[in-house]
Amino acid sequence: GAVVSQHPSWVICKSGTSVKIECRSLDFQATTMFWYRQFPKQSLMLMATSNEGSKATYEQGVEKDKFLINHASLTLSTLTVTSAHPEDSSFYICSALELPGSTGELFFGEGSRLTVL
Amino acid sequence: GENVEQHPSTLSVQEGDSAVIKCTYSDSASNYFPWYKQELGKRPQLIIDIRSNVGEKKDQRIAVTLNKTAKHFSLHITETQPEDSAVYFCAAIRRRGNKLVFGAGTILRVKS
Image (cartoon, rainbow over all chains, first blue to last red; front, side, top):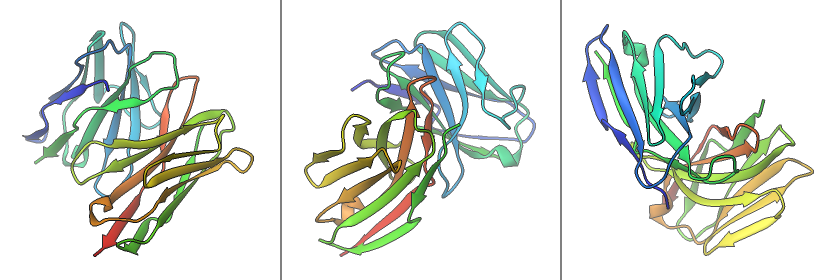
């Protein structure tokens, strides 16, 4: 199956700093990628849909100015957590569709565990 | 939008027994229903999926059933093994937007 790689796998930062997480599709072109957040012992909550070459679509309750998403190429989407606070500590996972426009399998990145001190 | 409910939240079974996890969805336009297994700190792994034009699908010890009329689908694991212990998520997706909505998850513990 398709491979999605995410980096870094874990990061610790100080409160008030910004952190960038990268999501890459290694062997296919992903026009659409999705960013999820998962708190401990909870489900995956969709944060936003990242569209190549256009603005991301954010889910209700997700601050677009705090979680900046850039999808500048067909193989890379980035999520930047700006002015991070301890409550932003979470597991962030990206995913991508191998076949755009189809209802197909989503492939997930390895996830990035963010800890804000 | 779509809402997916999953039960039970935790499930303990004896090794060799069967485990059943049930989900309901709200959007009748949803047409793809995957099940994921997630181990602690790792990415979700697709274990089986079913589309709305099929009522049942089986892959070795794992099976999924779908009742479109009632808008519910279930995961069945037979002959459970300790390595089946993990968190299982159901999900539903509709063609438009391709947004995957997850259930709350079920912690499965298989006791040996």
